[in-house]
Length: 280
Picture 1 (tube, rainbow, N blue to C red):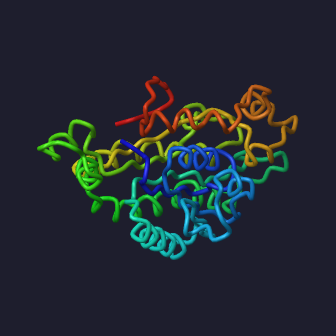
Picture 2 (cartoon, rainbow, N blue to C red):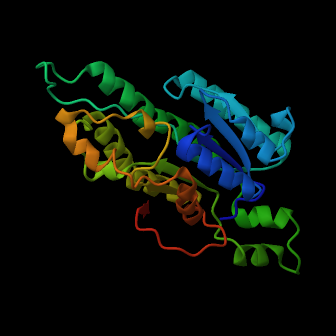
């Protein structure tokens, strides 16, 4: 699938892995809609040579709380209208919004895991991913297949359809959900986070089967620890030593390297084999 002149929705795109994805998509000449509570960093606008009127260029920022279904629906509708105005058809969604909170089943004071932490983590990581994905998918299934888009771009030759199909896999778009290695091997204190990421992993295959008839690919990525604002908030109290094996290691990857996974998902003109991608 080609990303040039296609529109992609990235939640949590103002920082961390989402921001790394946004940068990579913009470098690939895609149009990107960032849905986040925080605004995009100023250096991103400068790097891409964008004017203050962001919406007239390849980057659109929409302030949105992924836990609020009405805000998600409104944001998706705005992106769809924006894509129509730019002529860059919708190409997919990358669910980069996520939070983590460490809490034991029973803490040192004998108190049980709070429902507030549980509800908040699942609301952002799982339910937020579900709502954004289903609402983008509603519009993604109506996008012309890629070889049809190549026709409109003027593929030379007698049979534009045939030549377009030779250059394309015929996809309409890609849905990317971010799980975690914690979905496979969670540590003490990661109950809510592991549950949310394990659920995303489990959603991938049935959703992929649902969407295959439309030419929409569904992918989940299970990254290990990256150095992001989210992981930067973690601490390592002595009664949670098991967390140090994941969260307090010096081997954290920088968000920049996350784009390698994203490039394999689409893919562009790259040929790599990444084992942490679950692609059905």
